[in-house]
Length: 590
Image 1 (cartoon, rainbow, N blue to C red):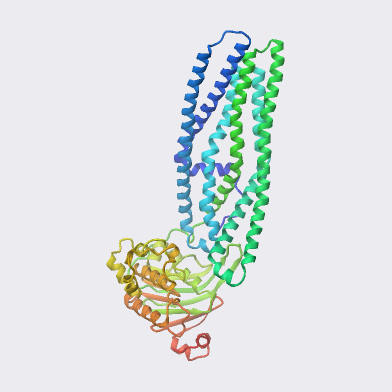
Image 2: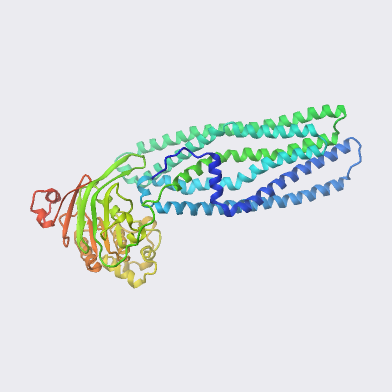
């Protein structure tokens, strides 16, 4: 995964970034914030009014009747309930709309990086960023922005109310205690919480990766007796997660103590100072009780900060991870000219070198000064030991990435200057691993040609030598393939992939071990049928069946990232070079 070298984004940068992505929800977010402020201030007014009336009653001063008091409080409560509902409704509308916008944004940014990104990032980490991280960012919209606004507005308005009640010094104390609590909540453990949240997210991502490896490789793990080792690695990750989680929740506990401690301290200070002023005759009892009651009720705004600060560090850590993913450059870069024309296209590599970066960040040289040419309409084979760079070279022809040095030529044009979609419509690469969705056979095939008729589907299935097998299935083309195509065999999955590729009517077809799971007889039938169906299209076939190259006009042998031999198969077989050596090891002849 290519990344821009940069220092971690600040909280202010991340906040501006998140708001910029979700401009359509700014208006309802503002409504939610205003409704929350009004709701909490009505709560302050209700208790302040009740305290004022109690003060009047205890001092024998005339006040409202109890029926009037109850009526006013009930009316305020009804309005408060409506405001609370409005806040929750608009807040959650914002949250779910933000999820939609964030997911769309993530996939729009991820798609141009595919499929190259799959080489440089682990599947579990990508899955975690696209699901859990986005879900955690939702907290910012649903439970952060409105509480943050009310935490600023409510203390100020509460102090203004106390000032209006002629409790000026108490208003200053009230505002000062609010500010003190907010500052302590922000400062205490703020940076540590963000760092701990980042470590927790990274560890969780590693756990997802480890679990994914265990699930997909359970047969090999059990077969080689690695169960205890893999369990130990997972336990180590869980232990690390426990340590970081304990540290983070300790900080949360400190914040909770700050919230309640400052609230009790505020009440005590207000009562002590207020009692002195009452004795001095500078403050009335109704004003004192109203200020204390309203001030305590206004503490809900501070508790809101403490509540959202519990999760906001994880939201910002998740936002940073998603932002990092989104900032990856398109691979290959967007733009270029259309690949016009019709008929077969020539493929060529001119002194191509290429290195890839694995998920751990290590760089590996895969190709070194590779040169070969496949003239338009010809059928060439690419052979060599596993890991010699055959598949890497094939992906460069489909422009999954661009070479570090040299040039990939398609139709005698530099592929780096051809628009990607146009190139891939002409040059179709059928990889070793054919992915099928948990859908019907027909729908999986129509991924390549959405408007294809059933007759066209049956035509390519006949070419792939699998039509008869489908006819024997009870649901035919409507047969479900299962998750990842697990409901069918490996050989069937390969032929479905081949049929799907043929639906695109490629001008050049690159087959990467497309018949590896088929027996020799069936493999030869498929190869002949493909050649007949494609007519004069160019074919580059990667295969380990070096003794069965019927129809191949030229073979290229690769070793350790280099093309070491090229020529007519029959001529090379009679020599003493690399191809003859491969043929001897395979125990076959041409």
